[in-house]
Image (cartoon, rainbow, N blue to C red):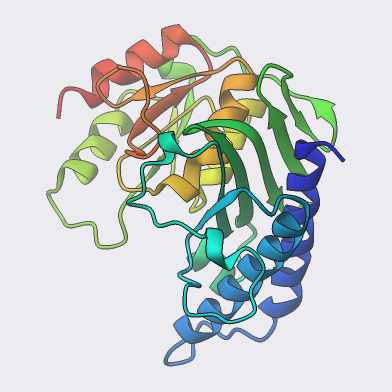
Length: 271
């Protein structure tokens, strides 16, 4: 089994599990967070079971803290977000449920994201959209795919003709840099969206649904897979200052083309 096949298998099985658990969540209840945590943990456990069975000597980094769990496959190989991933030969980075608020409210945009890092650089990726049964995947140097078929970015070169997305932090404040950047971009692009799943936003850039996307408040597990998928689809992605992206910092601008990226960078640098 190839590493990409392994990643897609784990992402699909976790996504099916999330879809089955979703009906139990009522967003109008007093504390839906507990139910979401249950879904997140179940999804991450499912992924770990599949990956650790095939790759017992790899390391694992997930959004959910499972260090207190017992009898969990790969438990002794779990690392934290503060670990220097560039020192680890192979580490799987897992987001068991990206788009939690959408999931709770039964909106359609949520996903499972899995990436394999080789000394800190993503080399295999899978992002699964359970609602659309869409599996985005990539292997370094071998292109990006959706359900096995090659994908490519939109080719958009003009910001005023582009559809752009952004991610905000959960506790974004009025008058913050995040809000000011949103307003600045709103006047420059054709349309602006906040869709709720960083992993899918990156996949949409890769397949041409979005032309660009930026974020400054996400985590490595949100973007590790999507970054590779954008790269393999021929897109451009850098750190917010235009330098090479350090994936653990997770602040970036992604665009279909270099020309569009330069225009986004100019607008976002104003604030």
